[in-house]
Image (cartoon, rainbow, N blue to C red; front, top):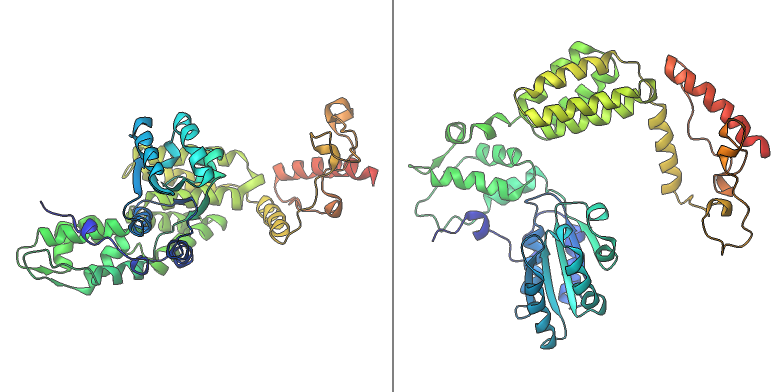
Length: 409
């Protein structure tokens, strides 16, 4: 039976895994010292989550098991738990851990908590959102990121192709193009190369072979590093600068790359960064246009994205909300996270608890009381911009409210 190249080439050692040096260093240290704790590895498909779990498991050949939260039953888990009686502990690799149902969790978690089972959870979802808190609280969580294009290109060049019956001449341009077209997924890159190898008659893999057998990859060559992101940046700045024609030009170039996901993500970001409070309803319109684009796919997506790009360019602009949240985040990230005022906490055990005043009981539904922590009570994050009609209205209301709130100081 033919073994797929991606499986044949799967790294067997930590040092052969691309990227994520910090995470790999931690996992290697825990494995070599046999002091494993339960972990969740999350990130996009094809970046090495399963590979890392398998490498860890190879250090413990007799007592590691695999469980798929989507397809395996509680009965399978019970069989695994039975082996705990023969070992001090076992390693359990759980694929799609975000799909683990409550019944299985309730059965498994006591063994994890006591250390009888060391759990390695794998998921493409963000565990801080998708994984049950009871599971999450018993693990260390690590994000596995996509490797760089250059790392993928170098990895492809070092692949062992000895299990193919013929020798190959592969041009550097092919390696480069495939590494770009894979969009950071190592497995996808290997699969592309494998298709070229399997369909080659003379063993020569060059740009002409690539264009003939992988035309989509060949067309995406500009979707790379600086060039691609330069165009994405130019599109963003053209919308911000209200230049409809420039924005449409760069939109067309981005559409030609076929990377609808990245383009839609950027459009969703632009509307709240650069239009913001000057036209809040534009966010709803952008969401509808992007959803339509994703649902209909290419090439029809161009119509929805073209229309919304024009409207975004012509819309009034404001970045006051963007500046406000950036400043608030800067304070939080610098450690300015003080105790919440006691009257805002639903906990009667706090000392010196002041009565909370219910705003709806007062004139204008506003009451002067302190909401920010005491050491930040005079902080100002939002500074209105008055050059647009709507935010000018917001600014008047904001200043009226601020006058009332600060009247007790």
